[in-house]
Image (tube, rainbow, N blue to C red):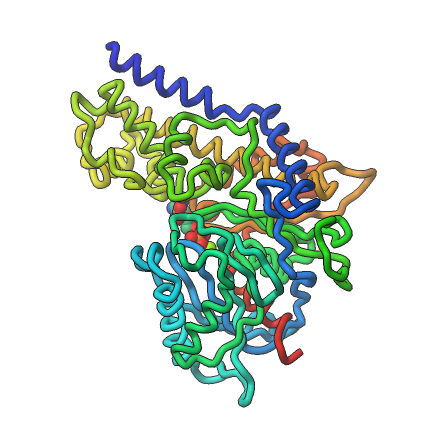
Length: 463
Ligand code: ADP
Ligand code: MG
């Protein structure tokens, strides 16, 4: 019928505008490299902030002692206690607690948010058990993973540039987040010092390097997306300070804010952006990361319902609710291997209250998931190639066998197998077989936690 033809037309159009042929991906990788140079050259020189992290040494394995870490940057935050045992002992013991952040705190005041965090942290500290104490007379030390853009002023201070990922707490913007946390800890009577302020990419880089000395970059694919890598200190023209002894500096790219005329953007992306809390910002993030993929799919299905009566004569009311279709549900539908696409049918029923979907319809929905996820995965691969190009690691020099390891973390990467699989195969496709042999993608489990505690250790006041 005409309606079905209309559905197919919408699907084909989506496939076309989301297309990421290899030539386009190479242009995007090149654009990423160009923006990296621009962001390193001058403050505000690029959409990529290329933030100097003040981390000029990554973990060596010698780190020792009991350290805390706090990870804030998405829907949950976590507190950890890690006992580090040096080269022999490695991570002797770790304990952690995860707490979800009540939605009203994500859009309330700075004091409310940090008081909540400090309260949870104090409760966790109170559960220190046998053998997991700091030596008497010593202050507890914390690695604070804060995964929003911060203008770092030292390893222990930095001002919030803007919120992302659905957070919106006006009075915290431009404030020193370590100062805010420290004041809250004082209000709670908790005696603890923040000895390293990092974000999840840097924590992941540190955690990755602790396990594998060939790690040179880290990428997060979770609620949001970002990357960090090790740069030569003398390749950072905007750096005003003394060159670090190591000659290296970790750069937090804030690549979620990347954009380029080469990016394949659709009407759905444009509408999502306009209606978001941060219009015009984080465009790369909005086509790649877990916060948005399900929402893009919802918007496509909504148009099919409205213009092609895809779900019958009326638009199912639930389909009109922003963010109702979450990326984990999209992923579950995309991975449905049953012959009648049972999972797709159940998700539609449970989430959108749409019943009686035919197999033909379910196949269309899986196809939409595939198009949206494939675009995101291939664009993340292009981003990684951009970093490798900047480091001159995208080609093989004669007989070179130097490995480059990229540490990856985040719920999207970890759980959405079709996404991570596509990202890894696209990386090979972009690099070619010979180069790809020396480029390794490694899942760095819980870098933002362990990594932050390692950086707290290497920046301890007692060293
Ligand atoms: P954060 O990025 O908030 O620190 P995570 O790294 O744990 O947290 O990532 C959580 C995000 O990962 C979720 O917001 C979701 O988008 C995505 N995610 C979690 N589970 C799945 C899944 N099964 N399939 C696809 N995406 C998932
Ligand atoms: Mg995280």
